[in-house]
Image (tube, rainbow, N blue to C red; front, side, top):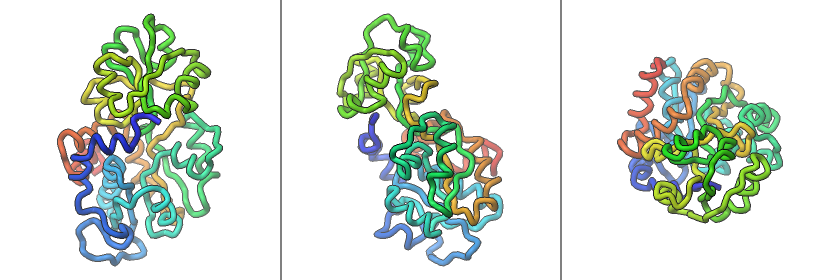
Length: 304
């Protein structure tokens, strides 16, 4: 994969620790994390969960505040963990709403999927999800593998999409984690799908630094990494679907889906790729809390 979530967690340890301090418990499903001090909730309460991942918690907080602004009772169960922990909670109804990522969610339930583009992945999800779970509208915002270049390199060669790399007149060197060399979207995938030949450098933890230093000119980076904005990088579009699309998408218990759809779909419509990066910058650089980030975003988008 790209600069992996493990690497990113290492790079963002300070900010993530600030955001997640006090959220963890031996079982996040046993206690609320909204400061109420009570585990009781009515049958009409919408339980919003999140991964143990700062960007996901921000989106979950946006969902929670949007619902509260619309008059719903909301219980927060953040920092639950990874899919093995929260998918059973969604299926059982302990958690009723969760921000997910379409490609990763589809592969969790259908590892052999051949869907790649945003529309294909989203269309495949309803049949892949277990009974009782549905997805609402997906957002255009993504947090997925990408091929990224510096803005100077993009300007020099007029790069907008991966296909434009064919017009680069100097050797291309792709940087990323060692396993990228064998991944289907790595150098072999670039050649097969786009006809682009690249050299490969296993840059691992130093991918950003190597890209900025010019020792590589193409990097495999997650699209919502805040350093894309802070370092003035350009994510190349992927019109041929080399990468499995992973758009932000709300997963919800089918029993409450119709009740909350209008509120949450409005959030999805307003959340853009650039907007998600900006939210992560507010966390990573400005060290704002998820509550403040969510409140400000909802106001700016006319949803509060």
